[in-house]
Length: 548
Figure 1: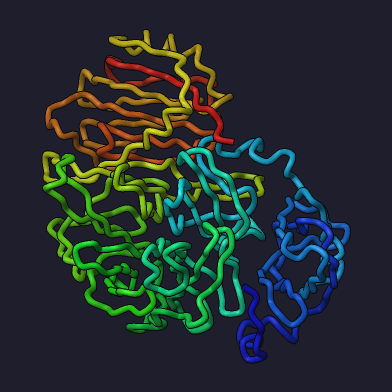
Figure 2 (figure 1 turned 90 degrees about the vertical axis):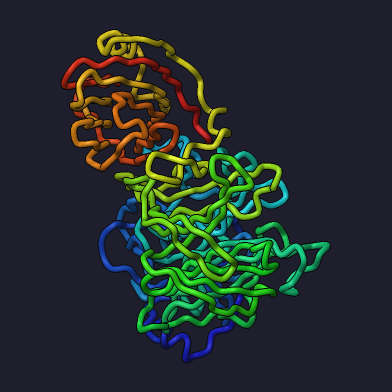
C-alpha cells in the first residue's frame, strides 16, 4: 500500500534534501535491472510515484564504466504504463545504468549457479535470513523470510515470499512487505483469521494476518499487515503499531512476534522477545494485546508450542525456544510458561532463527520447522539459505524428555538409491564408495557405524573431515553428545550433502548439525576413517534431485 511522506518523517530517515541525482522512468517492462558493485559506500535510493513512496533502500550501484559484480532486480509490474521517479544520493551515471526488461539479468541461469543450493531453499537474488510467517493455508505452505533484494549483505529488510505444495519445491513470489517511510520489516509470524475477529476480512473471505517488527527511528514496535488474496498482496494496518514496545526496559530489543491460537482459553497468544527473554501477550481480536508474563533466558525469534510425548496425545508438554534453537520444556496455561527443565539444544552449527508452521491441518498433526543457515556463497548474487524442513517430536530419553528433529517425509521423493550394503568392514565400505561421484548431484548418506574402541571415527568428503565422532570425550565435531545407551559403540546418521552445506541427523534426530561444505582438499572421494577398526553395519547412499 503506498503511503504519503510527511516532511518530518523524510528528514528523520535522511531521505530528502541530499539526493544528488534523479531519473524519471516510464515503466514498460516488468523489471528494473540494478547493476551492483561490492565495494564503495552504500547510497540511498528512493522509488517514488509522484509524491508517494513505493520503497527505498541503501545500495551500491555501479557507476559509468564500472563493471557490475552482479545484478539485482526490482519487480515493477504493478506500475506498467506509469512513471516512477528514482531519487539517488550518489552519482547520476549510476541511475543511467539501470535498465528495463521482462526478464531480469541472469534469469536464464538462475538455480544453476556454481554454489546454488540444490535441495535447500534460497532466494533468487539478494540476502536471506530468518524464516517469517510460516503458514499453511488452502493447500499451500507459505514461507516468508527476511530479504534484502538489493544486495548480498544484511540490510534493507523486507519480507520475501515463496509458496510450496509439498514443503520441498518452492516458487518465489514478489516481496510481501516492503520497507516504507516508517522503517524496515523485521521478523514475525502469520495466522489466518477464520472467524474475522479482527474485522479485516470476512468469514467467507478470511484475512491472512502478518505480525512483524517495525525497525524505525524510535526503536522496535510490533505491527500488522493483512492479505485477502492468499498472501499475494498486502495492506499495512492503518492503526499500527498494535504493540508499542519501543525502548521498553531501556532496550531496543523488542521483536519477532510469534502469534498462535490457544484453544483452551479461546484467545490468541503472542510470544515476543523483550530484552532478556520472551514475553507472553493475549488478545481476543488480534488487534489489542495485553502483557501477561515473561520468561528470561532466550535471545530473539521466540517459539512456543505443544507436543505429545512419545506420540501419546494424552500426555503433552510445551516447548519454548529462541533463535539458537535452545529450548526449555514445561507447561503453559495460556498466560504463563512454567519451565520444568533447563535449556537444552538439539542442533548446532549454522542453524538459526527456527520457526514452526501455523495452521497445519489437525489431520496432519505434525509440528514442522524451518531454520535459516547463514552460509555464504563466494562470488554468488545471493547469500544464505533455509535448512531442510524437519518434523519435531518429544521423546523420553535417558535424561528425561527431549526434542528430536528429522527431515519431513516429503524429502524422500528427492532420493534415488545408488548404493546399499550391510555388515561391511571400513575397507569394504570405502571400496564401494569409490564409485560414488561427489561433484555432481547432491548426496544423502544413511549409515550405522560401530567403533571397536572408544576413540575417533567418522566420514571424509573430498579430503575434508566432515564427521568426527569422539567416543572417548563424547563429542560430535567438537560438540558434546552422549547416546541414550551409555555403553553403545554405535552411531547412526542421515547426512545430506548439498553443493555448499552438510546437514546431518543422528540417532533418530536426537542431535543434528549443519556445516558449510569446504572446497576439495584432496581426492574427490567419500570415505570412512577411524583411529582403530570400524564396522559399517548399514550403508545407503542416494543422489538427491534438485528442487529447481
